[in-house]
Image 1 (cartoon, rainbow, N blue to C red):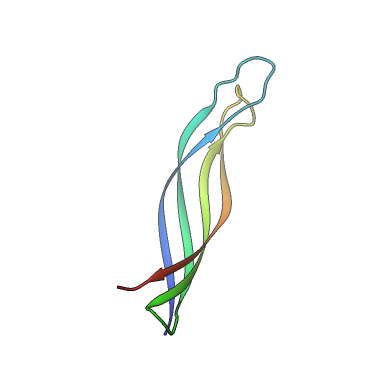
Image 2: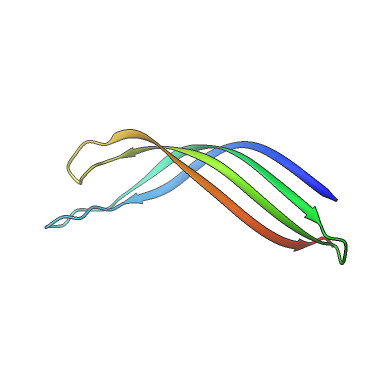
Length: 91
């Protein structure tokens, strides 16, 4: 058996930003919303109820970043790909 899936989703990411300086520069923690478009496949193996799956998602994170510890933050869009490979067994 073979299965294919498509998905659209969104959520929030917690990220940190750290700065290098001669003195002390505090790190920054923030929330960033994201949207994702994903696809996946699942192959049922012919023995023992085992399967193999692969998923790939393209995500766009909308973040406010600072160039340094004292500058104002700027709105940016950052792109990421997320992949996963799995092996499982149906019971």
